[in-house]
Amino acid sequence: MNENFYNLEYLPKMHRIGKVIGVLAVVASFMPALCLGLVYGLWPDWAALGTAALTAVSSFGVLWFVEPLSYYPVVGPMGTYMAFVSGNISNMRIPCASMAQVAAEVEPGTEKGSIVATIGMGVSIVINTLVLSFGVIAGQAILSALPAAVNTALSNYLLPALFGALIVQFGLKAKGHTLVMLAVGCFMYIAVGKSPLGINLFGWLSGASNYLPTLVCVFVSIGIMMVTSKKKAKA
Amino acid sequence: MDALQIANSLPMWIACGVAVVLVIAQALIFVKKAIDAAPQVGVTKEQVNKAIKSSALTSIGPSIVVLSGMLSLLVTVGGPMGWMRLSFIGSVMFESIAAGIGTGSVGVQLGVDELTPLALTMAVWTMILGSVGWIIFSTFAADKMDKIQAKLAGSNPAGLTIISSGAIIGVFAAMCGQKLVMVDKTALATVLGGVCMFAMMTLTKNEKFAKLREWNLTIAMLVAVVLTAII
Image 1 (cartoon, rainbow over the protein chains, first blue to last red):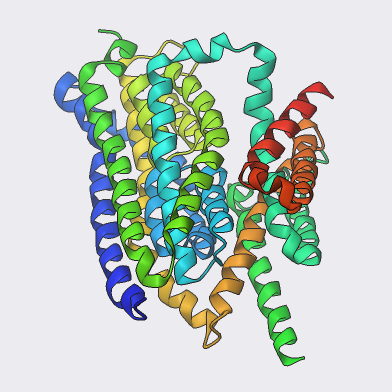
Image 2 (cartoon, each protein chain N blue to C red; image 1 turned 180 degrees about the vertical axis):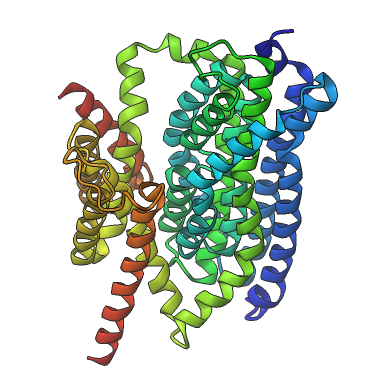
């Protein structure tokens, strides 16, 4: 055990590596576009691209800032570097990092928790990439081999079932708080117009349904936790 | 060459492969460094192994869902782009919308009209420009958010744990809320996932079933999917 190791050696080194890889990732993401241009002479119609990019940015640009801010308290600094290069954050990175912490019996937000979450997230990235690489080679053959009913069941019900199971795993320790947060979650998704009720209180905020509920839930949940723990500490 | 031949050509596989290799390299480097650091902060080898196993088990289900999303992208923008975009930065929802915006800007409806080489180029560029901000912001803000969070937690050493635990419940409550308000079979799957997990956790509290504990999530998820499909 070395008390200062984590803050003085580990973190600064990981921040450096994370930043270098982040810059490389930006460069790597342009490779297919450059390949089309340099190998096949296919360049975009720049004026049309301006419009297309503007449309994409106005639907997703807010997410560039809101998602890292919302997920940071869950995944920490190292998780942030990894999660945003690899994507699939809420459906895979966060569940894997959190379940790794449960299995190793470490608390989130601690040094141990951060190390374990980094391992968990890294393993999930390797597995996800292997599954996709296998899938792209085997291609359509896999899915067409499955009966249609199995296919619908997997692609529609697996993630909801995962989220339901996860909220129980992490919510049982704070039942009252979790029930309140579930109510907040449902309320927010009704308010952004995702329910069959068709109410939309945020129609004026472009793309709000993509980020607003998660943002509100994360910070309301942190806020309530901090206030109640202060009250408990005083009592 | 037609657009899909270009989209599935060897140079495209190589260009897209660079990003996939980078993602794997990053994961391996981070895991290696974290494992090296583990003994220094008091994480035992046994805990490391448990973390690896649990994460591997947890990733399988969601990976299959991403895979089925990728197959729909394969048909529209070709194998290499589908493979790269879902291993790298993206999510299924973002990629198909961005690709659609790109092809739409030159009058080609994705998945309806025949893909032209120009439409393919527009889709590729739009997917890149629409997503590169995620990496740029998160890469350069990661250490700054660290400092803000430390300030928020204050002098209370349990502060960071409280923030993280609160955030985890917040994230999953939002995910569940999104499915629950649909009041359809996905809502049912969410509820059944929770019920099955509760049953598994209660069952494996008993030491006789302790070995099953690491399978709790996988079993709960699969049973919930099967039940939802049958009902």
